[in-house]
Amino acid sequence: MLNRGLLSHPTDTFTEKMEDVDTDLQISSSQDSLMEAALAALGTGDMTPLVKEELKLTIQSRRLASGKGELRVNFEPPTQSELTEEEKVKVDRRREQNRMAAQRFRQKQKTLGDRVQKVRGLETDNTRLRAELRLLREERDDLRRRLTEHLKVCPGVSLYVVNT
Image (cartoon, rainbow, N blue to C red; front, side, top):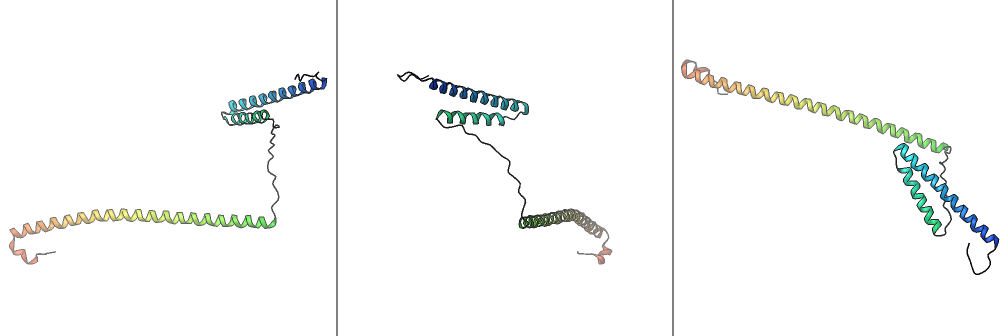
């Protein structure tokens, strides 16, 4: 109760007491909401509800301290309205386009995969053929060497000398 140098009026005391009761109720409800958020955070292991509630209470206390009213926010889920015929056609067209694009993408991926498999097969064949060619060249060189050695021993066969 403020003493303004005048006798206080009984309604002034009543008004002040009502403001105190209102403040006490706000504190009590804020503590309840904070407690609920803490229990939810403990139950789920997610600290988000607690942080949100604490932030909300901090903002409310600053608003009240600066003389502004309490901020009340009510979130309502958005209402689903019926689509117009034009919107339905647009959605169906978009879905069909998306379906066709997905089908083209899958076909492209399959073709690409087939090409990769074909390239790998060709690389394997190439490696195998190169190894076979190396062995054949080694065998050719060995046979030439043997023939040269044999011609040194048997000169009558020189008519059939192959230079390739």
